[in-house]
Length: 120
Length: 112
Image (cartoon, rainbow over all chains, first blue to last red; front, side, top):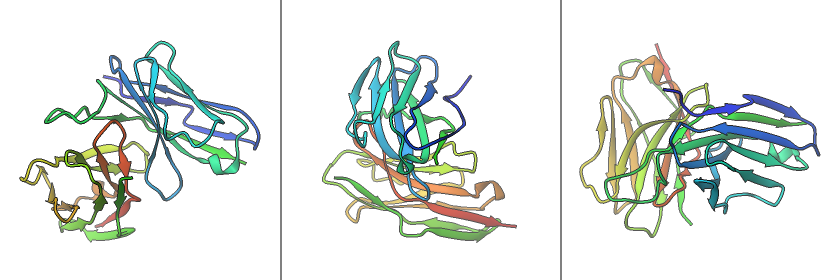
């Protein structure tokens, strides 16, 4: 079956521009996660959706970042007024249900290939 | 806040030999999961192995095994019989809720 897909694979933009990054989760997965991976670092959590609602957006760095998932499937990460420091790989993951701690029943997060964003 | 630390930026190993990657973490939670992920140049994170904190028995998955020391908050990964396809970045991660907290990664290079 199809895995998590992300488009575009690479995005180059100029400082100050607006960008949208898209994530298509595995069909039937209700939970969706966004992470940001800066060069030479591990991924950092941005936001998590359960269904259509953002259940935890504590990782969004500032109000230039926003994400939506209007129909509970595809999600779009939106970045306004991009800055050079936003350059990173943005990873999306999905899981059948929320990955909260359940004894012996972890819901694995399946990752997409990421979008590499370069802000010039 | 939870932190995950990988102290080895890069490791190299000869094909067919064994390499061990280190990971330490800090948490006040008593129930949590620990993971090792592999990230090849394709960028896709692949789950290698996971360990549930309440289980004392170390997890194994084919050539991959862990040494989980809960009191020491240590979680190392051993790759046995290394293969060229094991060349990748390896990330240690922690989770008690819905978000994964990752370490900074260790680059593993398997030499023929």
